[in-house]
Structures are given as C-alpha cells and as structure tokens.
Image (cartoon, rainbow, N blue to C red; front, side, top):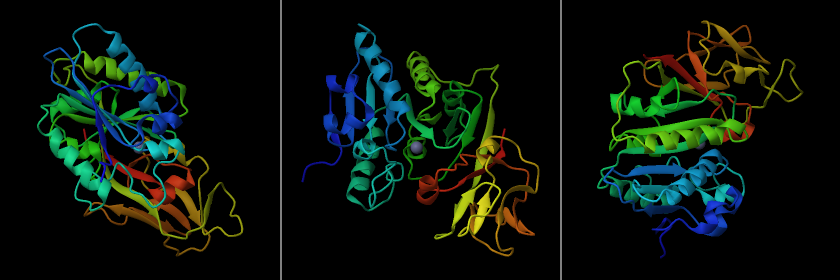
Length: 333
Ligand SMILES: [Zn+2]
C-alpha cells in the first residue's frame, strides 16, 4: 500500500503561490518536503496545516520558502511538513471520522498515526536545531507560543514570538509536545486565520529563527509563562448559546464577551455563564490531578473558583464540540 505520508525533496513550484484550499490538488496528502541546504547550520523542522482550517502558517511558509529559494547560498536545510491537506481543501480542522492531525504523533493505532509515529522516530536522527509548528486560534487571543519544556533553549525559541508563552504537557500526542523530547520545539498560535497580521508575524518569526546559530533566553527578555491546568468541555448534547438571554432549548448560556477573557487574570469567582436550571452540571473542567472542582455553580451562575487565566476560549461551536470551550492556566514564571 502506498504511504499515507509522502516524502519529496523539492518544493513543488505550484505550491509557491497556490491558495490553501488547492494544496491538496498539488500534494495529494500529508507530505514531508526535505530541502537540502548548503550551510553547516543544523536543520529546522517547520510544520503547518496540521489543522486544515488554520491557514496563516501555510501562507507564511510560502513567503519564507520563496525567500529561501532566492537566497543564493548559505541555506539551512529545512524539513517542511504540510499536514492535513484534505481537511484544508474543505476548510476544516480535520475530516469527519478521521483523526486530528495534531493528536497522532504517539501511541495511536490508526494507519496515519502509525506513519506519523515512524516519521517522528526518524526526526530523532536529524540533529534538529528547532521544530516550529504553526497554528491559528478560533477565538480572540493575543499572539502567543507554546512550549513543552522550560529549558532555556525552548523558552528562547518561544521568546522570539512575543511575551506570552504557554507551557503545556498534554496532549502528549501533539507534534510540538512530541518534538520537545528531541529538540527545542514551539507551537506558534498566530491569532485567527483571518487576522491580517497573522501571516506577517509567522513569516517574520521564521526569518528571525532561521538566521540564528544558537538558541538561548536573552538576558533582558520580557516574557510571561503560563501553564495550562485544565480544559473546559461541555457534556455531550448540552444546548447552549452566547448572550444574556436563554433561547428556548438552551440548557445554559455563556457570556457574549467570553473571548475577551483570554490571557486576562480573572478574579476568583469570575462568572462565565449561567445554567437555566440551578444544580445542573453540564460543564467539566478536565483538570490535571489535584485541581478538580475549578468550575462550580453558584445560584445558577457558572463560576471559575480560583484566580486563573483562560486561553483559547472560543464561541465557535464546531471547535467546542470537536475540542473544547477553552483552557484554564496559572502563571508559572
Ligand atoms: Zn491548531
């Protein structure tokens, strides 16, 4: 059987200026492109479109590769992984009944996950300088990056993208979390796909990191590291909306402005919504051990009990059902 993940050694010309929805026509599926450079700098892994509806990384990559090809000499070797092209053709995070491509890099027994694991194993032999995985959010968030190690080289890599850094260790099967065991690894969260600055920010970041020959945390850096401690999920079949009035079928409502809470330190007992029937328990903060009970009900209000910082809160119902409403973080550094 043909490999599900193709491996090629040339950046196809059509890929340099095509639209993200046409990438699948060019590549026919997930593809690793190895571009061999002539410099002695160690290679760098750049991945994008692990989620098919997160476009900024691909457009930033096009600009970056054009620049790389036109550079003449002194190219760093690049490994470019372009992920879920079939989902990108339909502007979906992933296709129905298929796995999320950012959850397939460890210990999953599906055909694509087996190949992803093999590919991940092969990255161990590459002596990689850095692994950069580029994403977008669906909710309103500032630009931020995520790391799975607090090693100064990982924080240094993240710091080039701005002051907000999120430390996460779940899900382990994400590409960035897996790569953190091999080399400095970062996920860039570039804001919404439609945001005009998102492509520019990711492109400028790639240019900066590509020019480095070592990674360290600058002495005079300003950064804040947050740690995700819980993920907020809705129980299945819960009916809900956003606003201050219950519609007929609603079991609960969330504040209309919930996305504005992202990366803001909340007071304890912050209210994020309301149950129609007090006593309902339709939300779960699936938390790391020892931090259960973060979301409580007080006279019908849905309350976050402690002083925490939310991230990735979204009003996008598809994302909420496929993934979650958002995350809760503590400030770590
Ligand atoms: Zn994503």
